Image 1: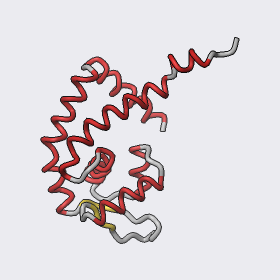
Image 2 (image 1 turned 90 degrees about the horizontal axis):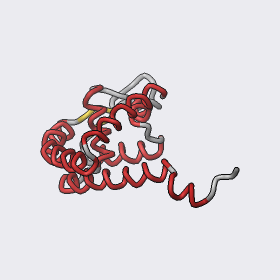
Image 3 (image 1 turned 180 degrees about the horizontal axis):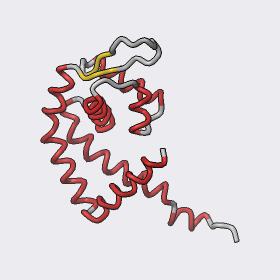
Image 4 (image 1 turned 180 degrees about the vertical axis):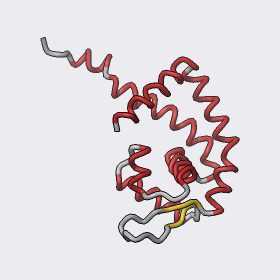
Length: 143
């Protein structure tokens, strides 16, 4: 038996996850906007901070970001002096690290991030958040 359009409209997991993602991302983006930062960029800064010096391809793998989107974000963050390129034997790799401004920004946005985290948790509920963490771990193991 063929799946009905109505069933797809009412049950599609991908659509539901995209709706949730947009709602949650908006919470974080609203909180980070005064700093000129989006949650997607903050996550890139966090990965770079944790890894110290990292190639863009590694950032893309960790965050599952396509190359062109990542490249645009890294370029923006370099122009804002949050990231800087590091010399590498392989000129194509272009590793990056946080600048002092990038480190300062992460410290400065922490309270706004905490507030957004609390709002997202309140919206979604602790049980859902725990499920998201577990599912994210499973997905990252598949990558």
